[in-house]
Image (cartoon, rainbow, N blue to C red):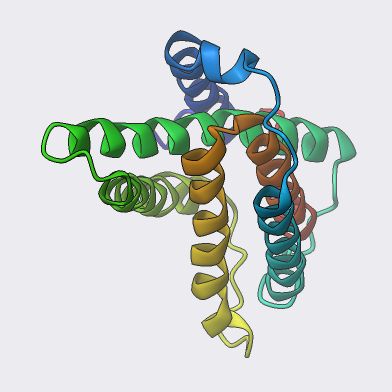
Length: 193
């Protein structure tokens, strides 16, 4: 894969993810927006607070290596990955739920296995794909680095709860795009081969 430019690898990943999303989750995408009752508002507030903490920690534990921010790349990456990767996270979450239903009707068991599948996929895609194609950006000596994974787990938990309680992809698209915007504004890479 080293001979394929990183942006083309990203676009291929997105194409596969969006195809999966459109084929399997069309009903969830087009469903009416869930009502904003107290629990959903609380979850959204929690999510925004966690994203703000993530932005602070990420900004203080990464480097751009002197690269310049390309606004078009920032826009393309934030929106593209916010949508595409959310579809993949949701696919893994739903797979865990479907498999659980073969064993038990306990919804929280479905949540637990769905969240586990989501986390395994997230770890694999970040460890085997993103870290290999993005430019070096982690500051190993940052005092904020130990907080990075707990914040990522809280982000994933808030998104999984949004999937579980509301099957709400659209809110997670936006939240994921904000996480990706934080990332590209700090790492600064081009989406153009």
